[in-house]
Image (tube, rainbow, N blue to C red):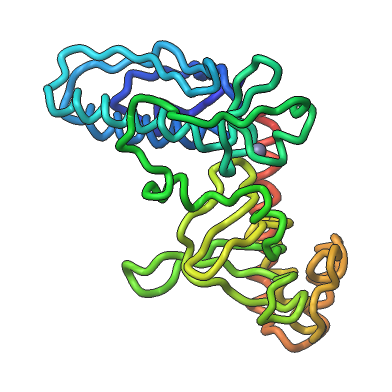
Length: 295
Ligand SMILES: [Zn+2]
């Protein structure tokens, strides 16, 4: 069971109120659901009423039940197409983690899982399903980048890691963002060196994201730091002229106050710049306190 909040703001044409939607499936499929809702929201911009009745896993497949009224025929068709696509995709995406999966039978219980989750607590007596998956023969997961860009569990395990990653928009308009971070296990860059990837092709839709596919390769995403904290860590690490040790936090510790003091005393970063970093960091910390208070 997954409780999904904030749907009214994300999809203003779909008739959601403030109540969370209870989806009777695991989190690995929420990306499929959001892609469907996004398509439906675009179609409903022309007017009419759309209501989600139920979202659930049944016989291993994602079932989305909805009703519409006063909808133009082409919008109705677009939503039906998106609905078929969502259920076709669910046969190829692990319901638990969102990586590539296949329909498997666990002693009578059907579930789409990756190889890691087929070997886990569910995995005694797994029978991979072979044969026609559903009536929609026109669907090919390899031709659908939403599915094809997802790693298998084995590819994920073999991928290099980016620690302290941040998504960075590139300057030129129309170019896709890339990631900065400290790399581990990438052949052409030393372990713990800072660098950036090629442009992002697709990123994990789980929270927090665990992988990203770029033009060149797949990466596992390691530690994440909020942007202002990350910038302070970046400068302290850079001034040390050493790569990050694997498993160690960039900047050498988790004492951000000491890092700010170090940056001021180093004389190698302009004090106005350190002031700005400190202000951003304080605001960031306050933001987290506020969020915690509301939760
Ligand atoms: Zn999985």
